[in-house]
Length: 157
Image (tube, one colour):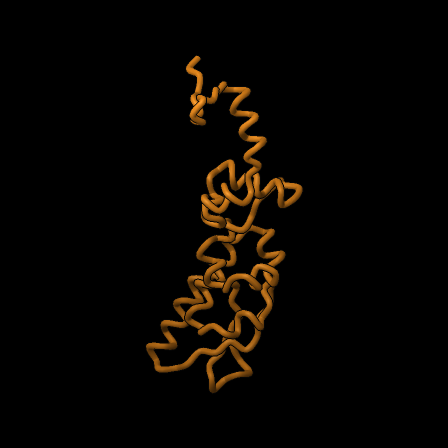
């Protein structure tokens, strides 16, 4: 970081940093604008250069808190969310660990009831379930019989 009149001199900070925050406040109190002339690290500098200097510490803290697999695949995650959204979610709503395929993910979403945030339950019931298979399983576990009028009655065991 440097100031607008002294681009050839400055200070290096490893973010997040309390000292960085203090330095920004001190410069602001003096009416001096701080600028960042170079970034180094795992995060692409093109991503960080769009933020105000005063926001960089907060962004760095948020990035530090993200899981390693999110940081390693940051470009891919940023195709779906902004950096702010990713930091706010802590990257957790994306990650389904230890699943071999999307069928396993879908099964877990149905099992935990989280599927309703992605697919309405009536649509899920109507479009995705094999009702013949479910009916066979229900009759095996809980016998039903049909009345001559067509109604079905569950046998109470």
